[in-house]
Amino acid sequence: MFKLLLIEDDTTLFLEIKDRLSQWSYDVYGITDFSRVIEQFSDIKPDLVIIDIQLPKFDGFHWCRMIRSHSNIPIIFLSSRDHPTDIVMSMQLGADDYIQKPFHFDVLIAKIQAILRRVYNYNTDTIELKIWCGATIDYEKNLISHDSGTIELTKNEIYILKLLIEKKNRIVTREELMNSLWDDQRFISDNTLTVNVNRLRKKLDELDLGRFIETKVGQGYMAIEEATTYD
Image (cartoon, rainbow, N blue to C red; front, side):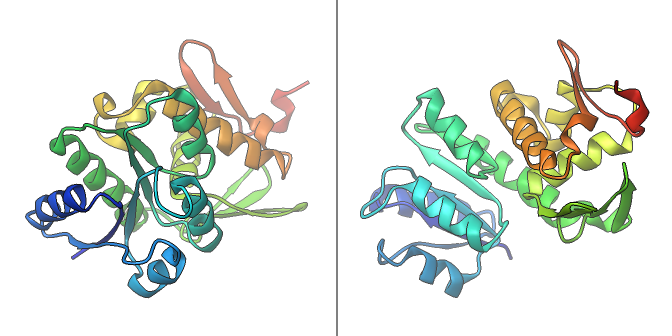
């Protein structure tokens, strides 16, 4: 049974979501002290976190940042705020998805199931290590090592990179990426994919590897294998 941590201060909504998720055999936990979220997160050790933005003490962005400093666990924002900057901010902080309230419960379930399948099952049929452009990629530990150092990626970022490298020197369409990441592109915005890829490329820049992920305007993205492809 997967353990989900729902960081939501609306008691009525929390109980409703907990009840619905429990029907799908998820073990749902809540926060009892919103000044000690990280302590309770560490005690519960959830498999996925669902978090609101507007919370007592500190907002959801703060706690997302704090969780990311401890763990690469999947994070879904569930918020009534619909400004594009909120969505972009959540993605930049390392969230895996953003759902706006009010929401259809089937959409929430679909997103949770897709993320859990991707995060906890995708390594079972792949080799753990991969060499790409002189860098060693550890898919299990979400690490990329190069002469200039080592960086850690989120689950989304390592999965996007894996998909691109599997089809290196070929264009992977945005539709292919969205379908692979979220199972059904109707449940994810085009902007969210762009943010995830840009965040991945920015991290790769730390190892001088970002230039090997090309954007093909109007089509998708392509991972380049040979450095000689560039001027």
